[in-house]
Amino acid sequence: MRRKVWLDAAAGALLVATLAAALAVPPERTMGDLARLMFVHVPAAWLAYLAFGVTLVGSAGYLATRRMKWDRLAAGSAEVGVCFNGLTIALGMIWGKSTWGVWWTWDARLVLTAIMFFVYLGYLGLRRGIADPVARARRSAWLGVLGAVQIPIVHFSVVWWRGLHQPPSVIRPGGVQMDDEFRIALAVAVLAFTAVYAALLRRHMENARAEEALAARLASEEVEVAGAAITAPRYGEVD
Amino acid sequence: MTGLWRQAWEIARKDLRTEFRTGEVLLITVPFGAAALMLIPLAIGVDAPLLERVGPGMYWSVVLLFGVLVTVRQSAADGPAQMDVLTLLGLDPAARFAGRAGASALLLLVFEAVLAPLALALYGSDPRGWWWVLAVLPLVAVGLGLLGTLAAAIAAGVASTTLVPLIVVPLSVPMLLAASQVTEGIRVGATIFGWLLLLVVMDLLLAVAGVLSARPLQEAAR
Image 1 (tube, chains in turn blue, orange):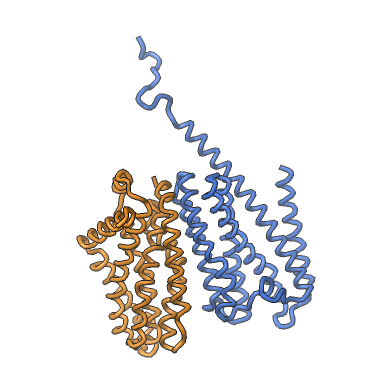
Image 2: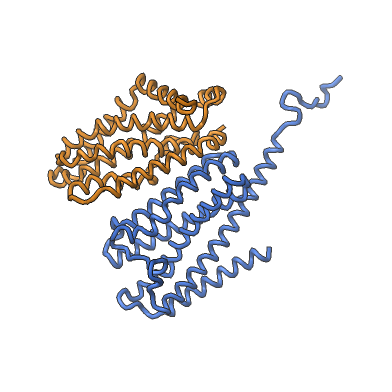
């Protein structure tokens, strides 16, 4: 219990540190204060990749071992990842309106990020539709593996197709391309968001385990002893 | 013919015979796709140069969106009773996947072949470039058939008619991109080899994924 609270507290403290770091850096030369949006947009995008990557690991782990903890990991990570993916798109649209003058443009990165969002919405939709936990885990694991093909395509889309979205500044051939102040603030933000992800994933996995235990208990209570054909005699019916 | 291929052939024949009897693809889905091709110019405006330019892209979009209906229809044909009979007969799940995907691919190829001249006529695109598209048609049909069959196996019995399109459409974007880029590449004289290679690689990956997942997905559906 203490460890869980520490994780939540660490995530909260790191978020406060991110806010302080984001406000402390000077305005960017060309984009001004708008560049501070990057301290949320970039970590959210990174976490979407991380979360869907963990979904891939969880799915592959389940297919290899058939242990439910891998399924809980995959499902929890996908759910958190979809939230962060949606946040990335929303923040990107705000950024686009301010810099390009439009809410949306047909840039490869934008379109593929939105498509990744829909792939994992489909993953969550599939999970909601299957009541049996084992069937749900088996089927969604295959989709979790298949959907992960999108992750490298989305990341390298800015390299493969030249569009409006800027090329990667951190994970790129030739090293990091960023001022030290921005780099440190961004590192704190990424760390904070990763801690938030870990805390949310942990909670989600606990909830999933509790739901499974409850479902198993309810199922065992519903089963009638010796089947429905035999009923206990009521008072007064026996001579 | 080995046991697996023979079983796959029998499944494909069964699916094609069902289609021959009902005519669902040719009599319903093809006219539906043709109607969509006719509606698009009404929505974006009757501007001949613009339509000529967007024609190939619209054609591939219609193939993708309506092609999903073909794969969904194939999967909806088998109820739990039919599945049980096939299992009791000792049918290899990989053969079932291969047969079903093969039948879907053939029907999709027919769907594409019927709509292609219609798109040419409606949008006034230059037919010279479209000869190369003949190489793309089977690659897209096979890819979409494999992806649709795999998605239908994953979502078997779970709101398949709505969930399968949600799974197939986002994952088939590389196919849409490749097919559109081949047509565009021919129009502007750019190389198209990379896009053709992408289609081939995607078809191969989907075939491997489908065969490997066939048995576990069948077990999960029971």
